[in-house]
Length: 369
Image (cartoon, rainbow, N blue to C red; front, side, top):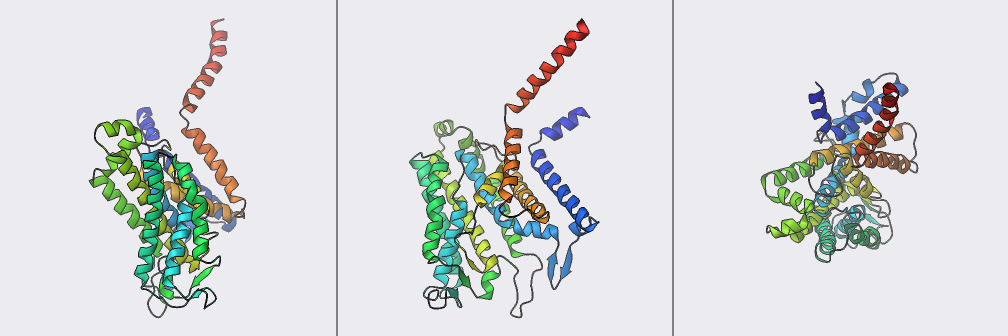
């Protein structure tokens, strides 16, 4: 029994699943305290063709973070560094897309896009290309110029949001075209009724995770990414082009940020360059750490990062439900980060062992005496 329990605890998915279970139990406790029943937390209802319930809300609101966590996992694994520009790239990609969709209309209609100038697909592709270019810039700095990832991505962390404000002309641009809101809400027919009862963002996040997992599983890319992250010099000796792999990882992360940015702008029907994706880069890094992935690179767990992202959103939900303000939220997340860092420290277990030995020595000496 002890051997089985030890195997379960040592499994790499134990930590993220335990964190998710703990947060869900906390949500249940808060629901029980406020309503006198745990039923509302698990209750899923169909109202006006829409599935509603706390669990649906958590999955829906975590969609952008799940997508960012997927890209961040790949970057961390192969470069042993983080991309702190993903939040700004979200805003930049969304701003470019809206600018192109409403070219010439924004200033004339009080920064409202009332009709597409180009097809929506063109605007979506423009966002993806923008994200890919941003990722290519970060990848070039890291893989070719050998700049530390955090320093390299700091450029777009500060400049990307400024570029978004330039495209938005410093305003909060709105899109008054119903089809623009499909990505962040529900797909509807011409009468405004929902065709699909599940939020579109959940399907998009699931699609990104599934495609990424299949590519990493059935191609050599997944193994190559881990090999470069474990030992970049050794991987070059055996013939792997580590610089190219790192470059591809950052491009992919940029595309993920663009997809998340399109969902975020679709939710509000416009672009708020100041707040779109703000601080989500830190949540994405936290999701990777919560997923049991080492921030020093190497082996990774995509499923763990997805669970970590959902856990963070569940934690955010419970904090809001107990009237924690948005300004106070980073403090509680910081406490979670401290706990995670301490639990993942390689020195924690030896330190506990030394403390245990110090406690046992006096007891053993008294028994001998």
